[in-house]
Each structure stands twice: as C-alpha cells, then as structure tokens.
Image 1 (cartoon, rainbow, N blue to C red):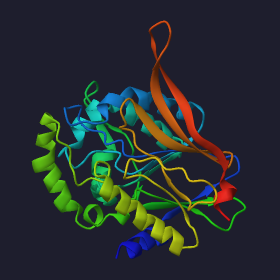
Image 2: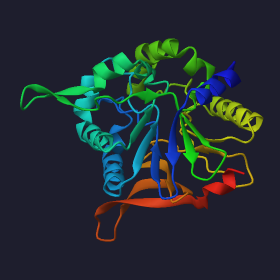
Image 3: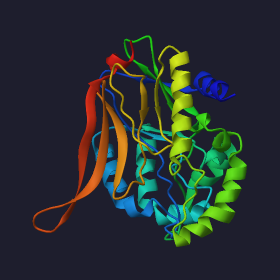
Length: 296
C-alpha cells in the first residue's frame, strides 16, 4: 500500500520547470502555532523570518514541503496568523510574485481541501481598518510537486514524506485526535508525542527505508522530502534521497537550496559575536553539488 501511495503522489504531482538559472529554497516542518507553550516554531520565528526575507530579496522561489501550519494542536487558524503575522505577510509577497508553492503534510492535511484552505488563507481580518484583506488568495496546496530540470530526462519529486508513514497518512485523523487530546497537554511537563517519526528513531528509520525502497524501484528517482525532521544529503553515488530537516531544531532551521543547478543543505542559526551581540547567519552544511550527478 505504501509504495502505491508514493507512486500516486508522483503521478498526480504538479509540474514546474527547473531552469539553469533558477533559485529555489525548500523548508518544511515549521509547525507554526499560536505562540503558546506548545508552539515549537516560536523559538525560531525570528531566524525563519530573517532567512525568508533574505530569500525574497534575492528572488528565490519558496517551496514549503508540508507541516507549515500546526493544525493538529490548534483548532483555529486566527491565533496562528496573529502569532506569526510577519511570516505570513512574507509568504504573501512570494505569492504575489508567483514564487510560492505549498505542499500539505500530515499536520496541515486539511489544506488539501481547496475550499477549506481558501476559507482559512484567502483573506485575513485587519484590526486597524476593520476589513478583510487578501492574504494568500488563490493559493492551492499540493500533495506533490515535480521539478523538471532543463535539459534532463529525469526529474525531482517533492513530497512531505508522510506518504511512507501509514499512521500519519491513512490514519491521520486518529493521530490528530491523540495529539490534541493527549500529547499537547503532556507537553506542559515536557512529554513529547512518541508516535512522531521526528521523536521516535525507530519510526524515522522505517519511513526512510520505505522511501528508499520506492526510489530504488523507480529508477533511482530523486526525492526531496521532510516529515522526519532529520536532514539528509546523499553523496552522488548513493540513492538520491534528500531531506531538508525542519524549522524547529534547537536555535536553528535547516533547508535545501538549489541555485544554478547546484544543490546544498543549509542551516540558519544564531551566533554570538565577540562584542556580545547576537547575529543570524547561514552556514552551508553540505554541497553545493551539481544536480546532474543525481539525475543519471
């Protein structure tokens, strides 16, 4: 079943071109919450905003690989928007430039329903003017996206990765119920959800193994995903399975860049300078490596 689910994600994926001068940034697993004790994104919100503004200023296309909005722990979107309005307004700027693509994951799976996503994200209420204003009007969330590299027969599949996780894809409503009723209250005393691949190493390995099995069975199809929160950047002679990590690492966020047909794993984080001030910087963890080495 799992292999068929991944294959269907590939068959139904939206296709966008990857040109020789394209610039893409991939983030996932932001889990933007309502700035409460359970909001894992809150600690890194300033890092994320700084990074995203940098990519906007440098004309990148932003692709979010799922779980961007925490709609398991939170019943209402308004609180999330108010908590992280600055980030959503940056997303709006990407959207207005036609440089925003969003994939739904298990924690924001309700956004696969276009009517539901439109109701939540098309507009927002401006408290100053007392009127509704456009936010991400017309944005459609996808299950998968295929990047079509210019000059190559093979392509790149972008998915969240929960397609390889039966409980978080097929039984996601049951898992959502458990998170809201059981695991969210337990976060107060520091107990995290043990069923999540991001916090359960055995589940993480299972998800990665299923994705690798599909990649191998499909002519070494290059895949970039999220979900497990574990960054992955293979060598050119290994299976082309990439993971951009997450935006809720301790004091840092990780992502994947593709610039001029070169792919890199990057980290934005805070450093302390000699004068005692703090600064947000980007570090390249892996790469840059030519894309063509993974498309043979």
